[in-house]
Image (cartoon, rainbow, N blue to C red; front, side, top):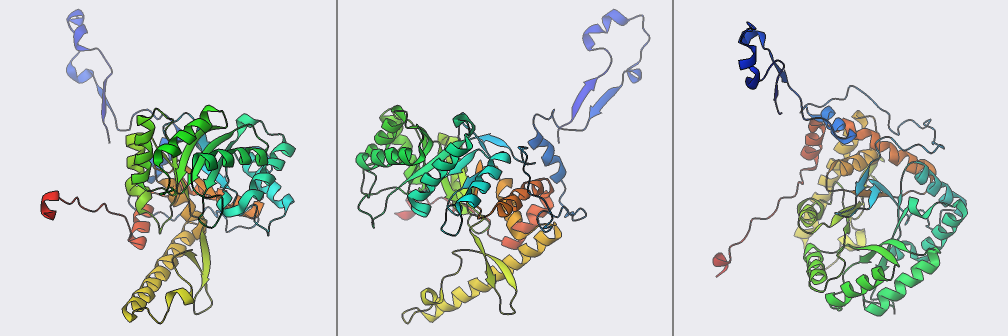
Length: 421
């Protein structure tokens, strides 16, 4: 903590002019301000509540355990919602974005989807993420209809959509032809004149990186998109794209979209901050709501991450080694124990495990925008209440979470080329 010394009386330059004033050094007090520099934003104010290394569960906020919390209908920004620059660009996005993959799923009606989008806008969310890979073209069509019906100003919201390539489709790869045709088709479905950010979903090893970056630069130069980024790219692929952009004088990517939650941390915490500091690529995260509830043997409902456990047919096969079976079972038991401890900690904090997961992800500085999804306005409202939990995630609480998870990623030590010889 910094200490600022401030002389209340005269400085040394005025001592010669005040010889007649019999003022001793004791009468010239020194004021010591034991505080930080002047606070520049509310984000700094929140950090003051988390400087102690002790757990504090004295205040219960009931962030979602109370079903009587009304869904807000007025256009007031949600407490805790912040706006950040995406990457090192000038685009300001809300630190919470809306992922549309569950909103436009078959089980959600059109009226319900519209209610979710209106609640998001009223809450201050200005980013909507689309993905042809998850919800298909229906999401773009439905979102375009809702935007036209609501009459929102184009400058008030940000649309991100992905160019998806699949080996199972005839329209595959990231050729110049496929990129341009995909962007034009998305514009028609959305009924918009431009898309804010076009994300390239997965890199194509069969297509030269030069062709990809030149095609994205053409899309931007035509005014069809303002920025471009990547999704599920490795740090090596992102750096290769950036190098090609610099070499051929093309627009560089501004964001990488990747999975990030309590059980998936390595890429987001070790490599993406380095990408941001070196080449200005920001981080848009998804994953806290990719959690599900699992059943324990005693019938208890438990919060678990999807993808952590495989199905029985996948986990057990006649060709699988018995040692691998035991390792999987042991890993399953450890995951159950961690999930149970996280749920207990969330209960002490007055919230549920899902809200704690959202707040934990937002607490990490590299996350500039966290994508949330919902199938009902009530679910979105409960997720947004997690923003109020951020000031309560003190150093002690974060250390307790780290103790429970015990999976903090560590960068592997560098290997000397001489040692390999």
